[in-house]
Length: 305
Image (spheres, rainbow, N blue to C red):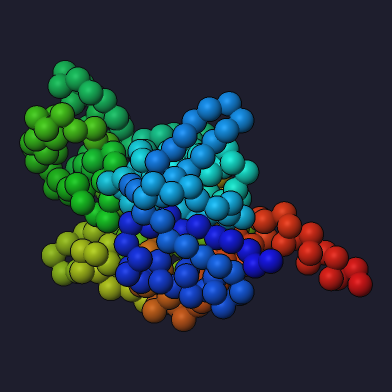
């Protein structure tokens, strides 16, 4: 029997979704793309169920989450339901939630010794001076705690600008972080694509002229890059401590070594496959299949004979 895979994605036409579907079919798997917003869940002791567009779904061997930030709550609820039904997944719902909350992610990784830009968090307007003092002299980076693809990230060149940005975010009742600016990175970062226990590909992203954010969605450019052993170690350690089997780990090169910028639990495949030439979709599928007990047992049996 072919391995049955569910792919949680709101848009079957996305490059990343299509690549994963192709990789699954190349390996003889059956794959079905499911919009998590069309999944209804029945929760009862020993009787978990998922219905899709009203119909009961068949049993899947594995589920691959491609959950966008805008549907994090519903998407992780659906993924957790599949986990409770015994379906294998490379990244758990709880791992995705840990990565999506930037403050929680930074706290978790700093606790295991992973270095990152000095980060401060506070809520009261009376603590603004304390936040800036903890981070150090300007420039400062002020970012939304749950922003994505570079949105909600502002570089404040002086203390007055930092205070203005902080006041604006507070006026929107937004949760935000204040971080030190790593000037020596010169608007470039490293995207390390981690699958399982290794970095399968990496690229260096450069910010567009006049910007400091290196996100490709913001007009940044990408080049193939060779990581140092320390950078690979940090990337893999970060993904593993968050519990992510598939992750895009973003690092900055600094005078004190690699600094963790953030961890993406649903990293895009298009930019990094183009920059590296690596079949990342295939690497993800191979990892997912290694998590399916029946398929693993069949492989072992074949080796023994």
